[in-house]
Image (cartoon, rainbow, N blue to C red):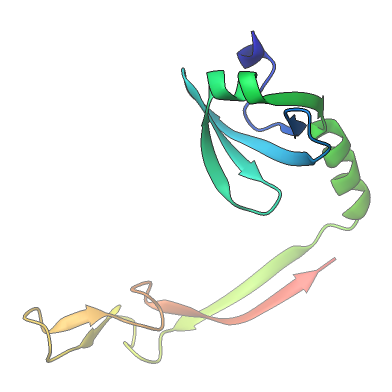
Length: 125
């Protein structure tokens, strides 16, 4: 059965029917009757397993190739040091007054309720 061939998290080259078009898909989720794919364009879709088995052909699993290529491209590893400061809008409360609501307060639009904002971020190789 085909369901044993598709592994969650792996990336495959697939072909629709007898067309010459080849697509890259990553298997995001495998359920009993469906697959969730992420296409190379970034869009996601659910496909029934029986429909996939009927209409598509797997050319190859390219997950290993992609990992090796990523490792080759990212030889240098970056570390980030982030410094935070108290939010200048809400002064560390996470809320700002609002006369348009019955609660009288809404979440701070700058810090989104986190009470702190990024002051500086440094990247180090």
